[in-house]
Length: 144
Ligand SMILES: [Zn+2]
Image (cartoon, rainbow, N blue to C red; front, side):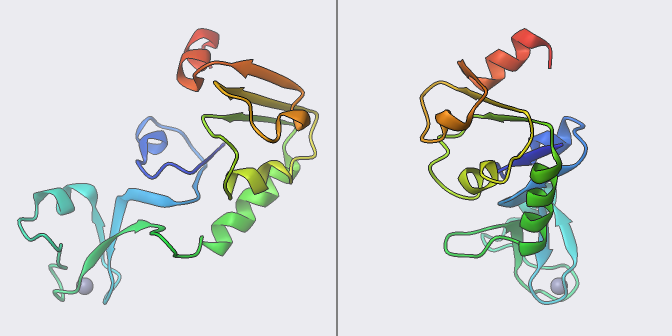
């Protein structure tokens, strides 16, 4: 299971199951008026600088959390529930300076909290193991 703040949707494209994309996913788009779903190709293929719905001409926007918009409460609650129930949590590629990542770590009650980061974070004292490195390189080296 992944909890990510990335919006690129690459976890899903790589075949990962149970991805909680806290800031949404730019692979998903929808019409503001009729909620018709559109994929990223539809947005990239449109010549109009503002993508429009083929059904109702409404504005099509990405399913991502934009600046000053609130997080999806259902998605956040589910992520918190998963973190609380986990025995092991790997945290990587985040400075842990902003929510929701920083807040989610505080819900972890399991045995093994592992940070994989290049730089120290303000929550390093909570970790049971710290690996200094780039998360992609570390996971590649471990075969995870
Ligand atoms: Zn529409």
